Length: 176
Image (cartoon, rainbow, N blue to C red; front, side, top):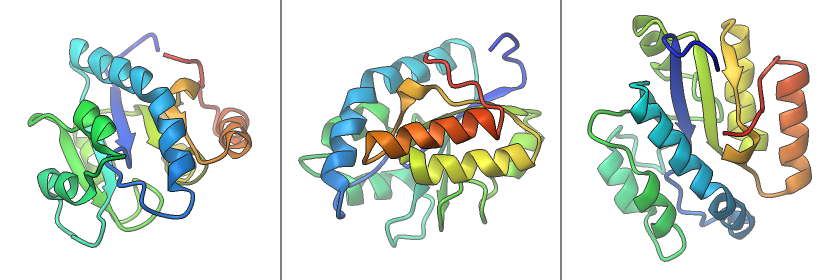
């Protein structure tokens, strides 16, 4: 990304309990990308980029990241959550379904902040990041989705999602 003045970083579903069928696979793959997620967040902070978390609500329906962290923290998820939890100056939204844009204030916030280039990262790449990227593309946003900052349960579905985001949505998938 050459020009960062219109860029924001969006972390999707990174606060996660991994307590679902396939969650063990997603956990292992998320642990592999954790150093890159940390690096991306540090990059955002160093460059004064807005950091926005959009997360599943886990039945709480309150956009309170402390409550969602408490709900999701377990032996498996603790390291990831502690390393990636939002800072007080970060934005945090809950989402009802896959896309970070669907029934959330994300688009309004990005418009208000004059941010039209997104760096998307998190999980699951073949579902929530893919759906978010599709919506961002429809809003005519520039996308950078670092391949080393996205995980899915299966490598082949993650790779296919990256292929779609690169070829159809014109996303830059270069690693961070």
